[in-house]
Amino acid sequence: MWLQQVYFCNKPEKSTMNKKKFYRGKLPHFQPRGGTFFVTFRLYGSIPTLVLHKLKEEKRSFREYYLSISDPKNVKVSHFISKIDEYLAQLSNGPYWLAKKEIAETVSSSLHFWDKKRVDLICYCIMSNHVHAAVKVYKQLPNGEEYYLTDFMASVKKFSARRANIILNRTGKPFWEEETYDSLIRTPESLQNVITYIQQNPVKAGLVTQAQDWLWTYTNPQYYPTDNQTGKSQ
Image (cartoon, rainbow, N blue to C red; front, side, top):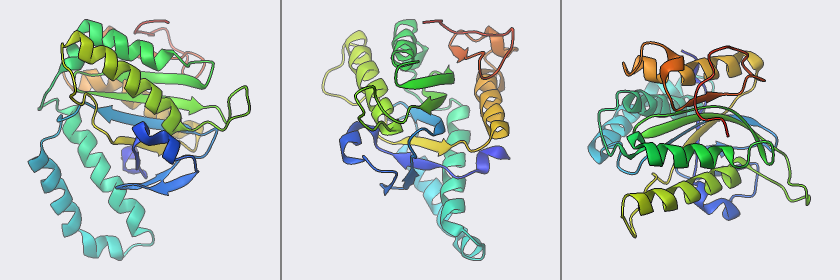
C-alpha cells in the first residue's frame, strides 16, 4: 500500500524553532525547502488516548521485525502513522467540528490564503474530524527569507483555530491536535496516488458515492487534470 511510505511528524505551532531541513520531535521530520508534501492534521481529541496507547503497544510488539530490516526506524514511523490514518478514515471519534459549514469554509480559506504566494496548493479534502492536503512549498519568500512546510502549517492552523473557536464560542481550548503528520512526495507517480487517495476519502467513508459530490474537496487541475473539480474556488 502506497501509504506505507515514510511519514514524518512536526509541531507547526513552533515553526520558528524548526528552521532546518531535518529535526526530531516525537517522530523524525524531513522538510526540504521546495518540497512537495502529503499532510494530515486532525482535531484535538479525535483519537482517544487509549487508542493511541494501543497503537504504540502494537508498534513495540513488532520490534524484532523492524530490527531485522535495513531501515527499521523509517518503517516503524510509517506503520504507526498509517494506522492513525486508518483510524481517522473511520470517523469513529469526535469532535466533528469540521462538519459545520462555517468552520469548513474557514479551513478552506486558510489553506487557499497563501496559494500562489508561498505554496502551490495541489489538493485537499476536509473531513469532519481531520484534513488531508498535498502542497508544494516555495523555497523562499520574496524578501529572501527561507520558507518551510512548518511555516505554512503554522499559519493554516493558527488562523483556522482562532476563527473556529469564535464560531464555537470556545476560549482557551485547543482546536487542532499539535502534531501534523507529513511525508515528502518524491515522484510524479506518488503525487498522483496521493491526490487519488485524498479525493477518495469521503467515498471510502461512505459519505458520497462519487468524489466530485463532496463539497470540501479541491484539486488544482494543473496537477491533476479532470472535469470533476469540487470544493470552493478561492
